Image 1 (cartoon, rainbow, N blue to C red):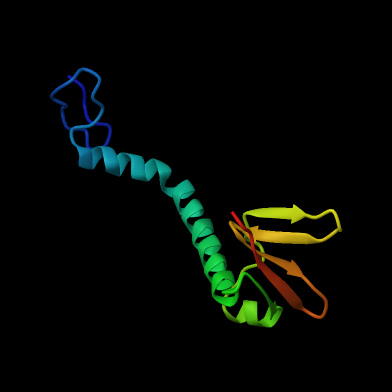
Image 2: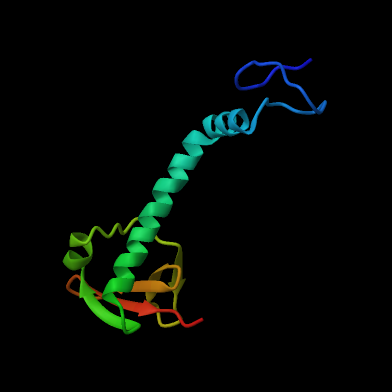
Length: 115
């Protein structure tokens, strides 16, 4: 007889079972993955928020805004999904298909990639 890795109860059933129930299996795996899951969840939430902000400010696919407007909406410049360096020397930061480029005087060009 084997015991459940989560609660210690005796396991009945298949020889290779490690848990007595789906609840114990889920609880065990949630404990193991807690730290990495929280980190990923927090990063994904920041990426989603940044994406929503760019989408709301860039309804036409190309527009300008200010750094202060982005910051006032909670935009976090540390989080983006990719960087594009153009042949002309410009650098765009993207959140999936929504992007921005730094201009002069704290202005930003907002763009949307065509798929």
